[in-house]
Length: 330
Image (cartoon, rainbow, N blue to C red):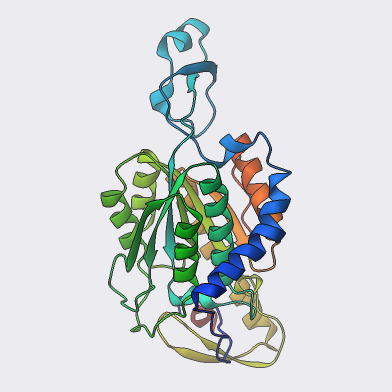
């Protein structure tokens, strides 16, 4: 099975009325954005990286710097690679590529991966638009079609009403979808063909997908400033000892009953999770995109501060867990 265990109970339906989106955004503005405002003063440029034309400085080359910015004259003179640093544009566009496939509905009631996605996108979109930037979104898996590359495209906008429209789309309950594995590469390929101007691109997904997303993600990172935002739940790392448990693959509809009292089974489960984690880590690293993990037990403010620190120092974050292939463990 391609997905993590799924609770057998019916998930709580998400609110759909426009008023619900406004209440959620107001709550986030009060509880999250207000706290961040006092912590991010002077850190505007850690949010988005521009491509301005005014030369500001020269510094030593760091891993994952754009090789097109290497100053070859200075490099030859000092015998050490140096890159040009430009004054960044203040008004930029950001795009959210959102994976709304069935697997993101997994997680604790009220704090599933889908809830984490909605909160992260709402906060970041509002932070960016308050600085005059424009944000757009491409949604995959929101229309119930397993083979469609993109179910909805929201062109870039900069108003609070525009952010509310995006949040409203994220809060709508997922429609019934035909069984089929997520193909994240179709969303990334659609972004390659549709996002023309250099932008900051947030790919928000649990990356539970058929293979093939690595190449288009790398191509996207060559053209844009890409941040891979990975959603995960602790149960995707290991199973608790709770006796007989029915696992449901949200992607394919398959079900499997397992005995979690069996220590050997739990060990196989964790080993396969670690193997898939290694593959995922390698794919994200080779793509050259910054990576942020959002766990269902994370504090959103802490997660966003980690993101700012990551952008400031250009350091890759540590990975913890991958989705668990339960059927293979069985």
